[in-house]
Length: 247
Image (spheres, helix red, strand yellow):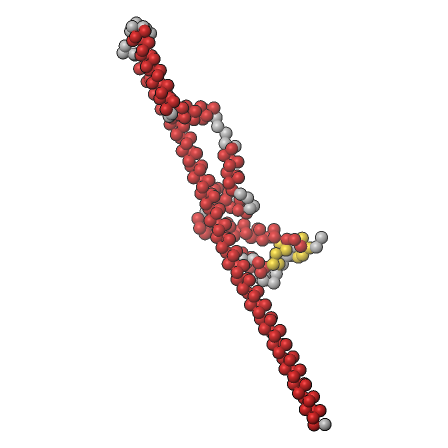
């Protein structure tokens, strides 16, 4: 297997990891030069070493923009470093959230208690209760008018339903906070990738223009050499003709 020696660490790496310094963006190039002043555009670096400096560049970019990095920003940085899709990780984390029996029960009760189905069924229950006691049992049943037992049941349901709904609302707020956190992470990663992409494109355009200028310079030099050779050839031929005529 062909290898090369890195101009930074002096270690041998596979030829497939060889990266020319001409292809490195100016921001990364400046960071590398701060550690290795002799590193220039004629040198080469290994891909693993370049990845290390990219990670440092991302950290410095975060620090300059936001100060001390939070746990969320470190997660974004880690995914950006490893070229991972952030949405897959967020979906995996959401699927692995463990809900207790109380959480699931609160969600179900709040979902049912806030629906038309609950209202209709509860109204039917009240009407049946009142009808049985007033008309069928002639106010001599288990709960005659003014329906003290029914009022007690309604009060108990209201007293229990309110904290259950509040529990469900707290869980919904936690979901909203998690969703906002996920949106922030995705937007932050997208912004950084767009900025890095712009920098890469600018660097490629500048490098391409420099290569074109060097190619044009080489073509001009070659044309000058051809023109000089043609002039020398014409001068030599004229000199021969002059010698022939004089003889």
